[in-house]
Amino acid sequence: MLIEPSLLVVALIAVIAGSALQSMSGFGLAVIASPILVIINPEFLPAPILALGCILSLLNCIRYRQQLHFSNIKLALLARIPGSLLGIVLLALLPSIFFSVGFSLLIILSVLLTYRRVDIHHCPRNLVLAGFFSGLMGTTTSVGGPPIALVYQKSKLSTLRAELGLFFLIGTLVSLAMLLASGNINYAQLQLTLPLIPALFVGFASSFYLDKYLGQRYLKPLIATLSLTSCGIILLKAFFY
Image (cartoon, rainbow, N blue to C red; front, side, top):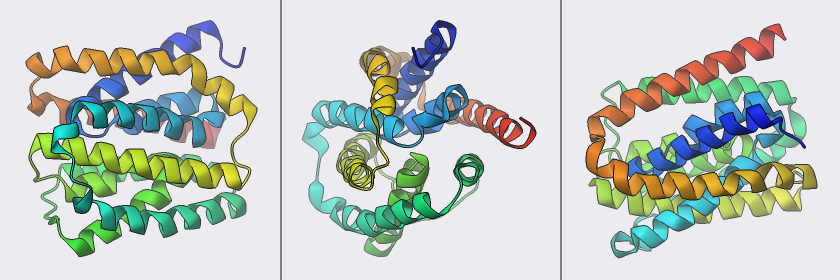
């Protein structure tokens, strides 16, 4: 077994929490679950987490299919391709500790930005920039949500959920295809991914219930607290163990 039973329970809880939050707020699986999964086993980064996100995005696309408009995100998706290609190159050139540290710092930065009055409009230029950096971050660290989420921060919640779901579905498929073609996916990563798939469905299903009772104002501080704590642990582990 690649994960000890006690750690598997922790991983399942992290995926349930992350998938529920993403289903309610548009993104959050990678931000919540990734730091915990990377602590358990660094092989979770990036392919297994991307695969989990791909499945969850498909579920949310089906759920919010009435609000889907591909034309609104096509520029971001096109820009994600060169960002993903650059990510593949960086994976081949840089050591793994770079991604662990960079991954943590990017999440910390993204959390801090959500507490600043960052005025980023939903326009073609910003969609292209967000798509590029989402591809770069998603392919190297599995966390591609913050750039595109910032562009959608003033959108209606139903629109945000639907269009981010479609963006992540197509974008993660592109990143996974590139990782596979470049030899960055192996059988051990598949073994890590499969036991966690049921947790996605549990988190997705629970979001239908939580959506009625958990106010939107509670989501951001909850995500921020868990994310910053997890990233702090990763940084301590990277430098002192």
